[in-house]
Length: 406
Image (cartoon, rainbow, N blue to C red; front, side, top):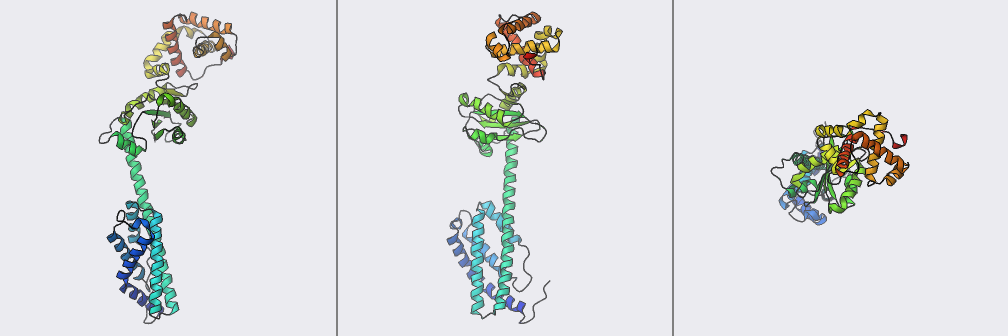
């Protein structure tokens, strides 16, 4: 700790110079306000910082800078840290605050040099005073910047907490106290629908399922907000012209996630997100390795197969029970051929091309399927039952041998 200054010691002379500066503090503060307003546009109006507050801050800075001269310099500045917080809260850009501090520093040095010259202060006294002044100014600037960042961090945390709470309320169907416009503003998505909900299976707790979807969706004019739950990552997507863009959304979702996902039907009111999410979850259950993204309205059989597993499992078993007498490879072969035949519009020729076999081979396998299930592919109701059972079965059977093994 520095000892009390002796009369006419260097410290004493620096302290007297500081005292003379304090005698001019009011005038210096007034001029400083004028200079800051001239140099930094954001301070020219009362919108962010009032004239009274700006002058009070300037006067405080003059006092804090020149008061300690010749004595122990300030190593911290709670006042400057608080000033940084106030400026951040008022929305003043940090660059503007830093420029105001630079204007202050230059002007205070000019005032100190002027006072030293007028009073015939020795050079070494002026140099010591300037060194201490710049040290204090550097401390104050750092403290101000730290306070500014603390306030920004607090604001960002508050926004994220509000966003998380609002998203949770939307997803749970209890958005009391808010409306669609307010929710859209917090989520930073357009306030008018149509919207769709996306449910993507996460690879593990706390791990994101979707990467880069928001940017890809912006490219097609769709705004989105994403929220991570314990089992899925939820997307709320404002999707203009769903008839044209739903396929593009499915493609973006497929390319942005390595797992499976479901997409709800379009809905217009953001407050109906919980109901849409339930449908997206059902669509997610309807996805499988060969169709990782299921769109609720586009894949009715997949949705029906997944909507009530305890019931649909019984349905599939009842329809396909006759296949259980076959070896697993043969059972899988017949079902795979049937699936390709369905995808080929009921054409044995097109199915054969897809399976790299002869059309008669396809017809033979389909006849065997008819024999073992007791259902004719010439009867529309039987085809519908087999198609539903097939969709259910391939979602509970993880892997089936290739048709080329038959």
